[in-house]
Length: 123
Image (tube, rainbow, N blue to C red; front, side, top):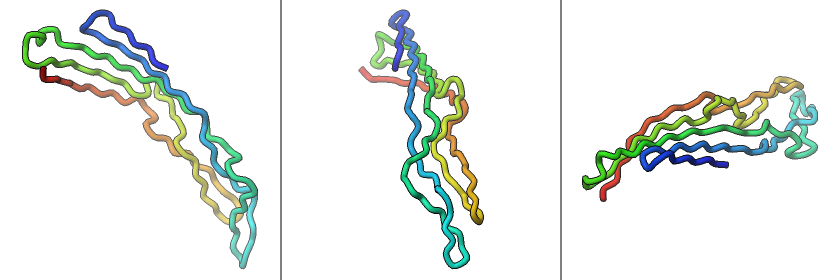
């Protein structure tokens, strides 16, 4: 879902909300012992789900009004990815030790990422 707002031709502000349901993953139902080693046993696939994914991105574009009679135009773009810093799960993995397993979560970009760019276009 997006929201765009232009106060005038020099300022553009946009917010983008992204949402996704959690992806499925497989959890072992137990362990099978074979020749003195324990191996995980999976009865069904994809019976677990990671947490839902959502984030809010912000962008502010400032078009330079002083360059309208030149051969090129330019604009500054300020963005914040994951504005409220949600720690979204990217993946879940498990490590087995004997007949037990430990679940770990992988999270990427779990804090806001700020960027500033200058864009120019030749006329």
